[in-house]
Each structure stands twice: as structure tokens, then as C-alpha cells.
Amino acid sequence: MAATVQLDQMPAAVYIGDGKVDVQERPVPVIGPDDALVEVSHCGICGTDLHLVLEQIARPGSVLGHEWSGTIAQLGDNVKGWRVGDRVVANATPGCGHCRACNKGRPSVCLNRPTPDFMSGTGAYTRYKVVEKQRLLSIPDSLGTREAALAEPTSIAIHSVNLSGVTPDDRVLVTGGGPVGLLTIAVLRTRGVTDITVSEPSAVRRERALAVGASHGITPDELQPAQMGIPVEHPFTMIFECSGKAAAAEMALDQLDYAGVFMFVGTGHDLPRINHNRSIIFEHTLLFSFNYDADGFVSALELLASGDLPLEHLIEADDVPLDGLMATMQRLGAGELPGKVLVVPEVAQ
Image (tube, rainbow, N blue to C red):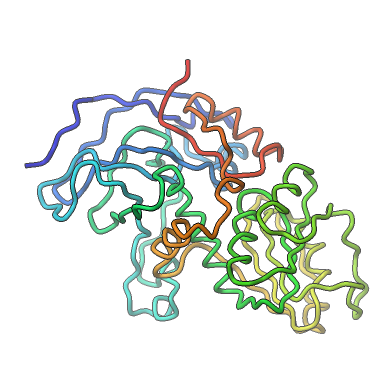
């Protein structure tokens, strides 16, 4: 028989419009026979959440947050092999397994998947979340529940690094030293890449990038515009654009060497202008990374549990309650915090 949760209301950080989030009481969701109700332990603040709130894109009434970990609080009658109290994350929604994208190991862009609803607003900045049984994924015993909240962004970093084809011989530039850039750098180091420069205007983020494995930290104004058919003095063979800033992407592309690879990872409101003539002459490869490999969350959990990532530098030391989310988003948007900030489903005041 399914266990029951002895609550009917829960706190949630709700987007109320005008670029603001407020804490409200929401009903605890009701699960179906093939679902589990998971009590959220921690949920990370993603760059997408910042865009949706600070740029006033989110749907009013939405609950955001998709980088989470937790424990099973209730099981539907058809959910077997799991117990209340098991520690879990939610695996990515699988692709069809046989289309062109899935056959290339890219189920996030499965050709037979319904158009994703990025505005659904049923996220994890709250206490309980419903998860379909086929998406439940166990957290390794050697990994803390708090740290497991990094599974989703780590799987994204793994995917972008895998798509890029980077090797230890590459000279890499990472633009943007926020949480996305830091995870990218950390994953690159696990692949034996050591020549990594980060371009970042915030001093605290440059320092954190060095702590997670970058070999050099520079400010964006230290990158020089390139002439039409001539490489800059010290070009890069591989670039990961993690800031989502149009100006950063445009300047970074000038730093790319002949036959270099440019990976767009960060998203942003303003769109960069690409000098296609120069990229044609240099035979650049421009790539774009969206989400995960087919085994992305499994690989991410294994890497997080391996001890090979500097988690103490990737995650901010202080967790944030739901009523501290808005102020923390503003600090992240201003570049004041370098690492991943985790939110707990509590109210401080």
C-alpha cells in the first residue's frame, strides 16, 4: 500500500510577474499510480531561471527550478523496486530511441518528442514534486543528497564537452566564469585538458575558476579584436561560450584559430553577430549544446561520486531558503556569486 504524506499545503517560490518571486502556500500535489512524490532536499539556481525571472519571461504563477535532489515521500501503487526514504534525482525524459537524433546519442532533441513546454512552471522551488516512476534515478551511496542536486548541470557540462571533441592537446578558452563555466572547466580537467583560460569580468569568479582548474584568468578587455584573415597572437583551438552574452561570443570568436571549434553553451537575451566571412576563411566549426547525452544523468552522478570534481568550489557554502531566492537571483545576475547556489524548501522568516 502506498505511503501517505500527512500534509496538504507546502511553501513554494512562485513567479508573480514584473521580475519578482514570492513565497506562497501551494497544495501538495497528488500522485498517480505510476508516480512517486519526492520531498525536495536542494534545488540549484540555473541560468535559465535567472533569464525567466529577471528578464520577465516566466509565466506568472509558475514555480521554477529543475536542478534538484530529494527523497521519496510517497509511492504510487504501481511503483515497484523503490521505498519511501530512497534518495533520488529525476532522470531526463527519454527519447524514442530510434530517430536520427537518438541514434546519435542526443535524446534531448529527439525528433519524435512533443514540443517542450519551457513555461510549465511545475519546478522544484518547493517542498514536494511528482516524478514518473521511469524517471527515478538512485543517488550513489558515496554521494551526498545535497551534492546530487548538481546532477543536471553536470550532465549538461558533460554533454557539451563530449560534443566538442576536445582533447588534452587543445588550448581552451571559456568565456563566463559563473556556475556553467565553472562546471565546464571542472569537467575539462577530468578529461586531461590543462591549458584552460577563463575570460570573466568578475574578480571573484576568475578566482573561483582558477580554483576549479583554469590555468589562466583574464578580463574580457584583455582579448583583442582580430584582423580579417590573420589569427590573434595567441589563438585558441577550442572555445566554450558559457556567459550567454552577445559581446562575449563575438569577441571570443575572434580568438579562434584555424580549424578551431566554437561551442555555444550559455543562453542570453541579446543575439551575437557572427563574422561568417572570417569563419569561412578559417574553417571554423560552430556547435551548439542544449542538454544531455543518453546516459547523461548516470554519468553525472558517477562523476560527482568519484571525488574528481572540486565540489567545495563548485557549490556555494551557504544554502538559501525560499524567501531568499529573489535576492540571490539578483546577486547571481550581477556576477557577485561564482558557484552554484542551492535552495532549500524552507522559509527563514
